[in-house]
Structures are given as structure tokens and as C-alpha cells.
Length: 204
Length: 204
Image 1 (spheres, rainbow over the protein chains, first blue to last red):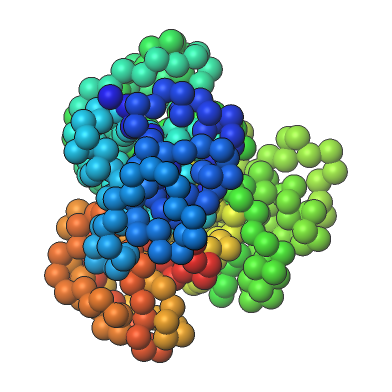
Image 2: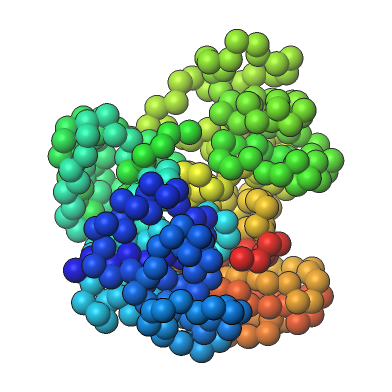
């Protein structure tokens, strides 16, 4: 089951929203994201939040997790836990990146924390990011730009199908940036550690 | 000596650029950022890159580090190394966040990699991010929103001057998000591990 979670970072383009909305069995929205989602003409099945500042709550299920306080889970984490609880095996986040860097970093770590429980992908108009450990096969167009960004200091990785083959330790830094697929199938074996794998859709 | 490094992420507002430009003794720009910097009416002392696609190279020092290839340092890292080499003890990055998430993550890890050699701050219109280990004192306005995002899994932190005092292990996740300064002086003691500390300037 595929869940789409909408967060309060930079809203995605309407085209991107439409693409992932069509694939979703469950759409969950944090209350901070409800404004742009409504403006985009999309209604979620569930909103996570207290909707305190909303004068016209939408006709959908609202799961009130109480007021946001530091030291609790973020709204993104609450939405993710709800999606997992309802059986999601694939979770796509939109609006989980840009704007506040603290939120972006925390959302990447959220994907790392729960990546063993579902396939979690953070998507924006510049690419798709997934946290990988162990074995992972990517089906891509040859020529696609793919970055491997280590999230831990113990990463050992072996790759096939990339122009610059990585085979051994990969320290945090810029060495894994902007690699290129030379095959329709790219395989990653992350022997130890966690790697954020970004398939770039918009080069800058 | 303070260096300002301009990268090819989301260009900052003119107001932000102007503020940091006035404080800088050295302005270094990656060649990808030269376009928006020129449009903003600002000229760097150094451009790092080959300027291959530039028909009118500006009248400044151009340090050609050869064509960008994966498995080498990123342009951001080359600019940072140049600034350190020229004696920078304080380095502010602008345009190092947003747009491509792989670049944003790599730039945060760049700040982590070199944080012992200079004070490195990634600034955008939503806040300022610094990687901290050991002891750090922040001078802020009471009420400021401050997030602590662990970058490693071994973080143990003790804080003073925050509304929700953190005292002990802080696992990667959302627990350290959106804390609040209750004093003009906030102290952080990061006993082990690395923490990205974000002082938020624009709440969303």
C-alpha cells in the first residue's frame, strides 16, 4: 500500500503532486501543509494536527495529536507513524524539503530511522531521495545523475552500473556527488552504514 | 578573517547577500553561482571553476580547478579549501542550501568535516546552520527558535538557556526541533557526536 505524505516545506509543482497523488492509496497531510494542498485542489484522507488556526476544517478525518511542542515528534513523524500503522509499505513525502533546513535534515533522518519498515522516498522538483542500507537495485534511464551521500561515518559501498564505480569506504563529503548511470540497472550494496541516494531530476 | 562563499543552490535575498557581503574580507564564488551574483551586482575576489560556459569572464581572480568530475571534491569544497588556505577563520556560505537535496546534504557534511578548522555557517533566508561539537555559546534574542539536529548516532548533549532543556543522549530524529531560547545566552555542550544547530529566522 502506497501512502503520500504532504509536509510544510516547499510545495511541489502541481505536476509532481498530480503524479504522486494518482499512485497513492492513502493521502496524509500535516496541518501546516493543508493550506497549499487546498489551493492545489487536492483533499487528503487524513490531516494530522489540531487545525487550531483553520476556520473551515475540510471534510476528512482529522487526527489531533495535540499542540506541537519541542521534544515531541514532529508533524512529519506523526504522519509517518500513522501511515505505517495503516499498513503503508511505500511512503512518498512531498513538501518535506527546502525552506527550513532543520526540518529538511530531520526529515532525511526520519527516512533513515524508519527505512527498514517501509520504502520511504523524499521527492521534490529536483529529485528523489531514499535512504539505503544493504542491497538496492535502481531502475533508471542511462545518463541519469545519481548522488550517494553518506549519512554515517562507517559507510562501505559497492556499486554496479555507475560511471565512477564506488568500491570501499565512502566518507561523508562530496565524493559520491553527481555520479552517472551507465546502465538501466544500478545496484548498490551498502555493507555498513547508511547512504542517502538521490536520483536527480533537475540539474543545476 | 571572514570569508563569504557563494554556491549554486537557491540564491539568497538581496538583503541577506548585502548583510554578509559587508562583513566579508574575502568573497569566493563557485562558477555555478556567478550568474546570480552578477545579476545581484556583486563581484567576488575569486571565482572557483573553469568558467567554460561564460562568454564574458569578470575582472577577478579565477582559480581553475579543472572540469567537475564525480569522485572529486565538489565546487563548494574547493571554495572552502581555498578560503581556509587564505586564512579564513570564519566562513559563511550563502546559496549552499535548497534546490538539489544531494548538494544541501553534502554541504552540511562539509561544514561537519571542517568545523574544527574554522567557524562555518550555512545561511539562507530561513536561518543559520552551524555544526557543533564540544562547547558553544550562542548569543540570541530570547524567544528565538533553535533546532538541534544530531548528525551522528552518538550525540550526548547538555543545554542551558533553552525552554526544553536537553540533557543526555539525543538520537537522530525530530526531538530537538523547534526549541526556544529563554535567555540571551544559550550554551550547548556536545559531549560526543556532531549536532547541526539551526537558529531559525523565518518560521513556517
